[in-house]
Length: 506
Image (cartoon, rainbow, N blue to C red; front, top):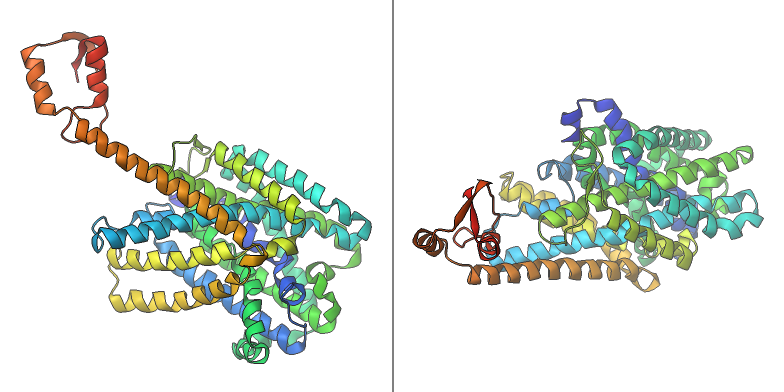
């Protein structure tokens, strides 16, 4: 893993902070706003504020700290993470071909869902940050989309420099971001210190009791606070599990909690701030610098998913689910740091299209979440198989862990499913296209391989023919690659047919 290879934990931790936590780190720009001001928001009353904050606290604690940082990140595949890394560890003989085939299809669809999220994340985070221009002066509201488009273009252009180089630049910036949002939160918490009562889960239960089905709908907005969770696991190959865990526990998690609770404290004092609680926390003289910092952080936020998509693409190529693509290794120390040009430009085109067509982060919020919530549920299913078959956990230990996390995953999935008519269909369509491409390519390779094996010239027959009529020999050694253990390599036969020679050593 990257941490073991480099032996430099602190630089890797700082780089991981920049690359891995950008997505989840910029969620405060829009997450709490959507709970109270979005199309399905609830009034920012005292009880509703504490109820939503309780849901946010326990979502981050159970899903990110509990599920991903503590549990799932232990299930890497030789240093690689993500849904496809879990899928690759399912034993070939696992409970018959039909059940294994179903698991493979499930994992493949989960990987395809991340491609949709990799397109939406840059668009929604950059738009959410640039929309702060409207807070400075309404006259700048019309320039939000053009500015966001330029920033997105620049983001994808610099990808060729590699996650190591980008992380070295982004890491210090994200450290400044997390410190800043934490201080903003502390400023308002000091005015409403009883806001920490929301840690008590009874406030979450009271929220559901008071709001009924509407409270369940709001869960789709609460889920926005954990949308970067899957990237933590998928980006293991870039930095290693150790630096990611340290960055989360020491910096990202406490800073996020302080900011969310600070926004809640603001709403208790100024319910009208629900339209833009993040920027309303900032002193008026510092709004423009904060917009600049938030925009830079939003650019960095996109990096978590972009890096994860690169990793998943490489795994898809290695497992035979994707055509061979150009994969550039951008680090001499960490093998997981890669750049895939074709995928990079496709993500850029998709992100620009969404930013221009939806036009605002609130509009895109309806499309955000369904892909990640479904991927999280698929991750939980595959994690059960890996813990049982690879780590040797007992059925009770693996089953109880899976049921606990699956209950949370399915609750969020059900809430996000309500977004499908309002834009949630976008990542589903992207995932369906990606799944079709990868499954078709894999099936095509299997058919081609079967036909080549059927038509392969038996190796023992070839040896008899060579002894009977020896060809001319040339100096040197030739190596002919083949996937068959019995048939003669097709490249060897082509060499004999066209060149009429064999090398001295084969």
